[in-house]
Structure formats: structure tokens, C-alpha cells
Image (cartoon, rainbow, N blue to C red; front, side, top):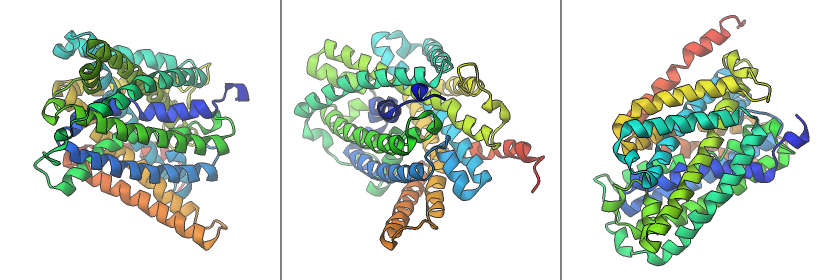
Length: 433
């Protein structure tokens, strides 16, 4: 691929920011409202954990700068092909669940402009499927074209989001933060659960590592984009959550279809409500575009290496893995059909917890692989010590978040991973041991 067709620092950073700042920031407050202000501690914990993971991916991207696949590649390098397959399989499931969750949030905000969507599940499902397949088509046109869409939507989404966050800080009612924990769970359990829920919002911190060969100067661009995108997103998340939870009482926030639009309505009335709704729609649309891009890229990298069905390695005339994109969107469509009976908030919470449990598999494998691939590096004892600490902290955070996902999500995630084993067996049945 020529340098002209590769993506640079700002597009790569926009992939990180755009994929992270999607539906999570605009719809997660509804899921967190049942816990009260203690969920802010969940944000802090998940932010720290996300920074540990981001640093792991930064160091691994420098170790393997010209490799596609991100978490799949890193797991394979350190732990072997089976771990690489499970990493890729778990990551792919998390991407598909993420895409379904993002579409739910998109339609939820769209219901502010088209109220019928809030009352008619058939209409909302039809719109959801239309959006998924529109962006699937966009991504078949090529990674650079998809990158342009991502860069534009990232710039457009940040402006209204920052506007309502900064203005909202002047409207905070500190009485909304009391009682601190309104759930029936203990403080530790509430923080653990909310930290796992908010982990969904940090999914995407690793995306700059995935299209490695499609990035200009990846040994420099990928680490910069990963850390810059993670830091920008962390600041936006914490400030906006404080503003929103301080403006809207938890009892009202739990039942909102568009919490940021409601907050804007309190400040500027209906014009503000509609402005933020449009910003949320742009945000979720851009995030969905970025995740659908990865929906094809992740299995493509594994398939090229013989660790995923060969059909996912097929590319179209634009050099994009169109078959993988289409298969992924079919599965996303099925998830949407299956979960719309839960209602928007119920479907969203289930999908993000399923996402969290499955994405933690490649995250945990990457942290473990980091410890293995760096053990023979010629570095000073002090640097080796900090590398070990970083890998252990990232791994410990991942395990803690996995526990916080709850029994139902862990069970579904575990079953989803086991379903991949027959595929691995079929891929490797002709290989010599």
C-alpha cells in the first residue's frame, strides 16, 4: 500500500477518540444512575485501568510496529496460536456486541427527533438495521475513505459535547450526589460493577494498533495516537459525567432516553436539546463507522495468518475485507433482533456487559504476552521492573473488571468463547502437531 493511501497521526488518533467517544458517553449515565454518585469512582478506576492497558499496547506496538491485528498479533507472539485465536475470537465478539449497543444508543437519541421510535420497536429495529448496512457499505470502499468519515465525525462530535459539559458545570446541584450509593449493593460491589460498565466506554484505546500496515510510520504514529486518544477521552468522560450527574437527579436520569439532550434542555431549552441530540447522533454514527471498520480488519489479520477461516482474508477491489464486514453485520443484525425485546436501556446494558467480558480476553492475553515478549529484552533492571509492574497491573485490572461483569454476562461470554473452539479445530485439523 502506498504512503498516500495510509492513515496518519490525526486520522489514527481520531480512530481512537472516535471509537471510544461513541455511545458510551452519551448513554452510559442511564445505566450508572441506579448506583448514584459512587459511579464516579467507577469512572476513576476504569480510567486508571484504561491507562495501564493503553501503556501496554503502546509498548507492544513499538515492539511489533509493522504488524496488523493489534491484540490478536500480540497474544500470538507471546502465547501461541491458540491464544491468538481466542484473542481474535473474543475481540470479534466484543466488536459485534459493541456495534449492536452503539446502534441501540443511536436510535435512542434519534427518538428525540422522531418520537415514534421510542414507542414502536419495529420502527426502531428497522432504522437500526438500515444504519448498520449503510456503514457496512461505506467501509467496503476502503480504509482511507472510512478514515475520512471518522476524522470528520470526531471533530463534529467533540464541539457540542464539550459545550454542554463546560456549561453544565455551572448548573451542578450537589444535592444530586447524595446519597453517595443509592443501590442495594455494598460500596465495593457498586464500584466494581460501575468500573466494569464504564470499561465499555474505553473500548477502542487499542484500535490504532490494528491497521498497523495501513498506518504511516507506525512505530511513531501508533504509540502517539494511542496515548493521545486515551488521555483526551479520559478528560472528557470524567468532566462530562460530573456535569450530567450534578444536573439531573438519579431518579430521573435512570429513565432518560437521551440524558445529554435532557441536560442541554435544562440549560438552553429545546434548541439546546436538539443541538446535543444532533451531536450525539454524529458521535454514535462516527463510532459505529470506526467499529465496523475493525469488524473486518480484526478477523482479516488472523485469517491471513491461518488462525481464522480463510474466507475472512478475502478482499475486494478496494483492498478491504468485504466478506468479513458482511458476515459481521449479519451477526450484529441478529443481536439487534434478539435484544430489542429488552427495551433500549435493558438491551444496551446487557450488550455492554457482554462486550466487557469478551474484550477482556484479548486485553488479558495482551498483558500476559507483554510480560513474556519483554523478558529477554536487553534493558536496565529498573526498566524491566517497571515493565513487570505495568503488565501485572494491567492484568489485575482486567481480572477485577471481569469479576464485576456479573454472572449472566460472564456465562454468555464464556459460552461465546467456547463456540469458537470447533472453528479452531476445523482450521487446524490438517496441520501437523
